[in-house]
Image 1 (cartoon, one colour):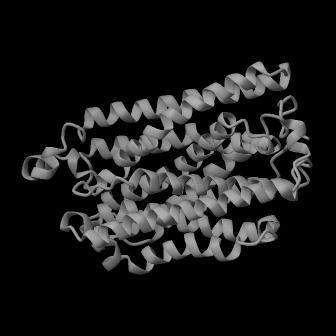
Image 2 (cartoon, helix red, strand yellow):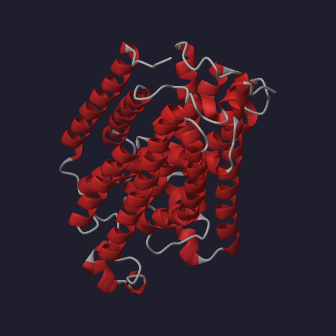
Image 3 (cartoon, one colour):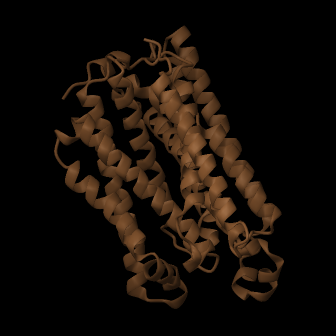
Length: 395
């Protein structure tokens, strides 16, 4: 059954976009003469562009993971995963625009290592210049974007061809490419997190940071996948998706929430216990000036899934999954916001019209692109070799 965008969904994406734009305009009008205005505006742009980019990248990773492991259960929701991943070109465009603007403004007090003044007066920054310099930064960034887009384009092209040709040759091509993508992603998911997010706190580093950022990306993408699946089911689409499929995606949300929480605690506990000055500075800033948001974010992203999604029935209940999913998305948005703003603005950071407006604007764009992508191919991949297994998936 083909999916057509409903007027309600179209109005929602348009409304979010317009409200977000108005909020940004109000925020700019109220704060344009502030000392930290440019840093705040670009920092908010970076946090939101990265968050929504990460949703597409997390879905691309999950798609490749299912190809590489030859999973069968997911075939009936594959087009949902693809449609989330297909936001990636737009996410790359938004993120690249923000990064280019920051680079043009010599770091805009977000990336201090881009500013010659700090390079020449700060020995720690100067020592990191072989890696943290603008030219090498952009070489790495272009490589990340290019690799992601090439794999996305290949997966999508072969997926659509499979609908027409059938057989197993395209499936095995995706199997091989999926395994290869995971090799690239294992490196790039960490190094890009160091480049775009961790380098904001240029004196600080953590060997767990890349994994921590990846876990937040993955669970957020899984939440969007399950929310989209539930939305389509509510409209009468995806008739082959049953409670067991919903349960499986819910288990992923539950499990990855624990992975993220484990990494959050491991990073925090090890640095707190070692009590080394240059390491604890990162957490002193966040626990002293953002205590409610920082620990509240952890509570949301750990306790909510643990308590509410523990039971089998909860993972099959559309209302519970929707509620928990929305809460988790807000929690991980706060996580990215704190990572960026606490490092760039310090105690001067706060959530206002600019931050909320940027989030709503990009949410409107994301929903519009996602819904459009869903209309461009049959919702059920008709010639997938594991389709019959997926249709009869039951436990």
